[in-house]
Length: 298
Ligand SMILES: NC(=O)c1ccc[n+]([C@@H]2O[C@H](COP(=O)([O-])OP(=O)(O)OC[C@H]3O[C@@H](n4cnc5c(N)ncnc54)[C@H](OP(=O)(O)O)[C@@H]3O)[C@@H](O)[C@H]2O)c1
Image 1 (tube, helix red, strand yellow):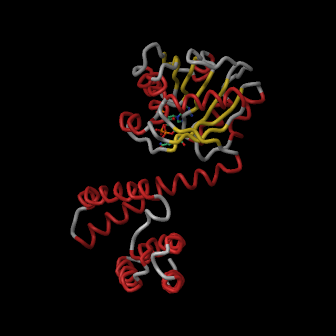
Image 2 (cartoon, helix red, strand yellow):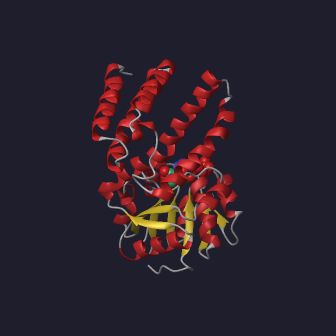
């Protein structure tokens, strides 16, 4: 396997991640030459963004053209797609899923292809926004030997930061990523809904008010680190305020109160590390939060 900038790269699965990575790699001088997808329209959409990239109706035909094949389908389509292709020893195949293990690429490995994964730790929706977000993003990489070195170089060339994952760490790695992505998004949406239902601000208007705060929170953590960047009444040991918050959230709903209480309880160890409130106050705060959590089951 000869891996360099003229290595021929194909993308199978032309959605948000496929299109974004294909364009980013092409702009960094890599040779993205083939695309195929469930629908020809998506393959054309990808190939139309890249000079000298050809779209194929047939997935095996597209894979046959390339030395490195990215499978950027839905997670549950990776294995059947890999199984539908005839692989050779000179090829490498990589998926971009944070949740799937390398087992889904087993059929390619058995036929002699090198296997790996390349997971961008970033939320992809529109291609242009995702391209703008790539620089500075982390890429979780699995693979060995030359392929690992090549994927590392790809990540660096699109402005990313590679990290290396053991297969056994993958579920926790992905759970942590989703806690920052989908779970945090859900939390923000819940707060916006509370603003609409209880404070009279339509939820997307509320979002416009809340997003600068989300950015400020990220900036504070970035600038000050853990534990210094963590703030709030539960960190300061302001027990009366936290009790009022718990009652207010409970008046909205048990799930909303539990969201506040369980997150504060998980984060309170950093209050202790920061040392801004007395050990005694940390104990009282934990007891208060635990009481609300256990006395109000969902
Ligand atoms: N979205 C994210 O934020 C994100 C972040 C990191 C990693 N990932 C991973 O990246 C991969 C792709 O995710 P995505 O967000 O790009 O998904 P997506 O936008 O929904 O695109 C998935 C693409 O897969 C194609 N596809 C589905 N089944 C297929 C099949 N059987 N054969 C060929 N193509 C098929 C679809 O094709 P058609 O358009 O032709 O129907 C679609 O374009 C997943 O493994 C995901 O876990 C996603």
